[in-house]
Image 1 (cartoon, rainbow, N blue to C red):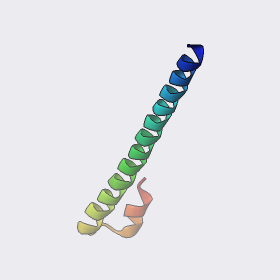
Image 2 (image 1 turned 180 degrees about the vertical axis):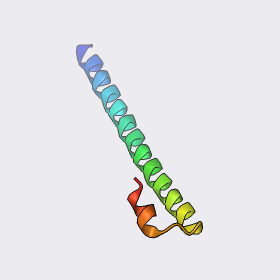
Image 3 (image 1 turned 30 degrees about the vertical axis):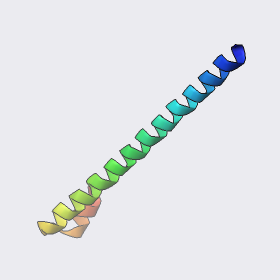
Length: 56
């Protein structure tokens, strides 16, 4: 019985880690997408590239 509960806790921990990894990857993707969208917006509105590159 204790082995089963231990196995369950390990698998649930792994699941939580997987969800954390997915959310972290999603956050990175959102940041990248926002940066790309901002670059697209700035280039479309003819802002100098130095100014567009300088803003983080």
